[in-house]
Image 1: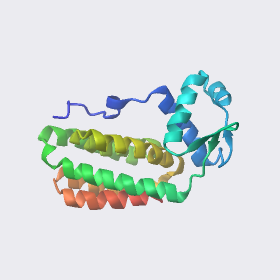
Image 2: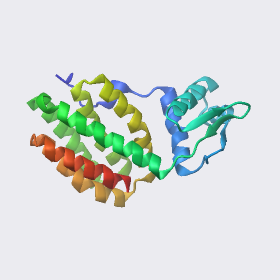
Image 3: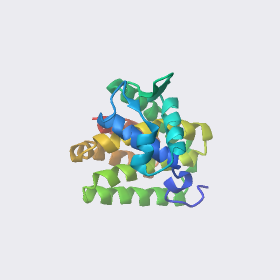
Image 4: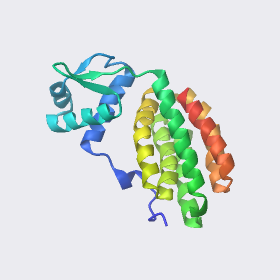
Length: 214
């Protein structure tokens, strides 16, 4: 059973270092921090009105993900982050979600389908309102629902790591035109899940995510 929770985000939450790492990552993706540029902990802490400790931890998280590097006598330096990097994360994410769909096949009780449908209808409403940011957030919740339904800790861990990059990329890059391209394939994916047509769901989610990449 899926613990009867519709807001999957609440199961995880975001620590302060995670929030700060996303803040810095957005700046990298927007080009506000360029490759080779130094990130100064003190400046980030002052901008966010926080101590340097969570900033230092956020930079460590970004170092693990290959976004920054610690250079002796220079500090934390932004590494190059290319379109190919995003494409690589996308390929991994598609594989993870496809595997999640496969592993969840026998877990779609009526109650779980009802929760998934409620999330999907919420996403449709954000599309109707043309709220790009909230539409993207709501769409991601459906992917998250499937991954957590599997209760596969390794798969969830890989998803969370890849999703941070792609989620921030979407927040930076998505516009109404991107949503228009993404939405039909996403609708096919969600409806295929509700109809227990899991092979079609995998095909549709691949198309949707590639459209979302732009």
